[in-house]
Length: 502
Image (tube, rainbow, N blue to C red):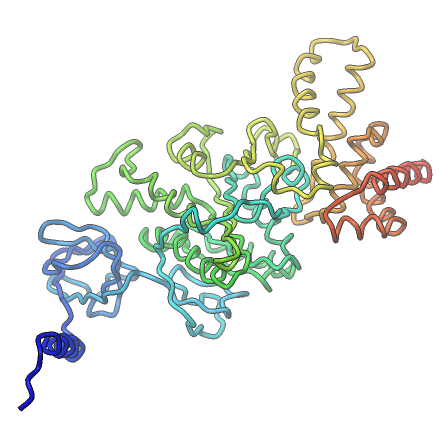
């Protein structure tokens, strides 16, 4: 009879124990002791983890959000119909996540990844957790590849790069969503996948945005995720995280993704409602103490990965709604401190006919010129300084009738720049067109054009340059640069066009 040594005995025991665990399939269950307002208090789950997915006997799932001494607080991801005191709950052992697939592109989905556009059902190819650790510093590389919005005022003064987090902030009805939609439309042919996450929006508003994207052929590379105002607070709460999980799925394949969160003010309000129902202590403005962490752990997931980790990127455009232009309120200041800059939209400018109503003084991009093409950097040059001087001078000259020629010239130049920055809705400009306009403006070639004729002059000029300066346009498209020689040729084309028009 052969004898077994100690290591062999241990090995056999280990395999038997593992086999027993597999065969037994024991699941920890709990019992509902209280339910209401989309929150269930469950007794008997001693080993449940924060963020774990649990399933009720009605088939509805929930996420563990509170861990107390004897009970856990679970937020429901569906109707509480049929869930009563005594209903059993089972642990799944999985983190809350979303099924992802390539076929999501072009579809409108709910916060749980289910299609809500009336199309075919989606079969998941992979499963990504909605809460995921942000990539570490060692996995990232600097933001230096431009993500063109097609909006002249933004691309020239507050450029956005792939992997950046740029906040869009302003009062209600100032054009925040329009900037995000324009940016999505401008990604056509840029090899960027776009995800639009609507949080707490009216279903009619989301339907209108989907219609606009379809009209501009943007749904071919866009996913729309909607957690409408009629849905429970927990569903609105998980929507941006679920949208980011989809973005991470594409980023893991080395792709560039643009994600819009519209808006995070409503997301914070949904979280506040959920937290108060979970009996968490309220803090400033009744928000729970971890409301900063709510958005920081979301936005930190947006980055640009280095080549060793696939080289993909997530660019985030979070939207925040302010009250009466107050950017020093709790949620706005939190998100401003997390992001890499902000585009501030001002009600006064909007009402004065300035569309997009971008406040040049309060807006900033902390990535700056690193995310600009060389041609754009050269063309935009002094633009921001010129506009700042114009706004300051305009205030002082309101009380003066006699102006010296230099001051008058500065004011005329400023008025031209302000008029040039006006841009029709859903008409983003190609980068080379922006460079043509800015080059002409910065050299004072448009200062003598009547403001009423400027829009038609601009359209005609771009068509003329495209027809007569094909080599210059090709250089900008292919290299993103504009040599001194090409710049002189471009300015000569502008002068020639002016003579023809006049």
